[in-house]
Length: 419
Image 1 (tube, one colour):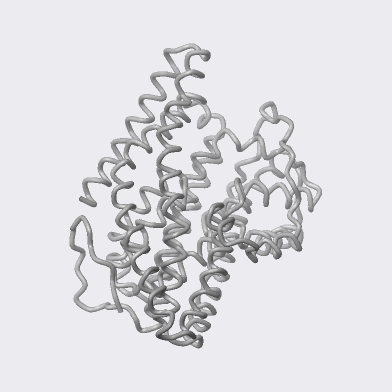
Image 2 (cartoon, rainbow, N blue to C red; image 1 turned 135 degrees about the vertical axis):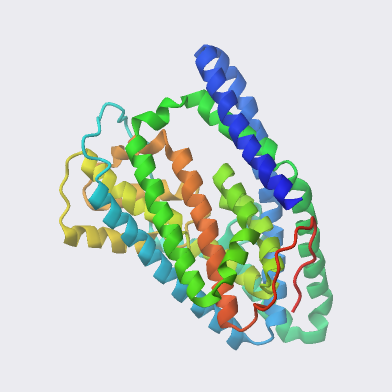
């Protein structure tokens, strides 16, 4: 079932691009404008179905994980290890983007004709950001899929249920059942994924045409080269801990990687990623805590893109940036990028804020809007890879992963790993 679904997703990607290209080349713009909303509808339905699952699944999984963890010392230790890995991976990602964009210089020689007035971007207020981490309403946090707020709610609920002991067992069982139900629903939703991928790519290519890649081909190719190097680094770091089992992990997560890449949505990959990590041998009490935390603090592909994009825009405008200023930009991105995964177009907001902070032209953001979907596909898949490796590594450090005699077995519905 897994291999078949992966192949169908690839087929959906190819058919989507071919359909979009055919429509773009053979129909007038007025007709395309009527057709593409229907393609977009196909992908939007899938994303809404996935978002329907994410909040209850994340909440229930974290609560059960904390209760099963047994003691707050283990929770604190796992949290510190996770944050340590996340900070290190973030520094590597942003630094790699900074080094490559200076070496390859994709912005040098680019035309400014495509630059339009940038949309209004609200500045990042750290006070407001910190306040928004704390949920003021359970249902609002769940309805908006705010991962950080759900994490805070689940932490309090999990610790409280652990303290209640037997009195809290009925609610723990409810959370366990809720988690299983959401995973079952995810299995149904995933059968629709190839159609959603077809619709998403047909929409983008029919609307913009293949020329959106021609105009900024150097940026796209060099950014994907950077992602390939980042993948090699992340896999190498994972192999230092997981040894040869890193290849088993990559086989298990290939479907979530494909979903993240083709939909450009980390949320879409999360439910399936939890299932595949179960099958790899990661206890749900660890994956259910580390993955949501990583979705807010460990966006490796996104952070590399942000450093790449800021310097690219400076190069387009012919602005020379001293290395000390570039290091200041790096540190700013490191701090401002944490915890904004739930913000729409979060990377755009952070890039705009950073450009304004350092006196660079904010309107340069519009240069990359045309190819942002394709860039987002690559950085989303990288985010999924980085969080998968981080979760497996932390589990190994905790001595909780079965690393001996593990085999990759294809089956449609594997039971959740219990421990």
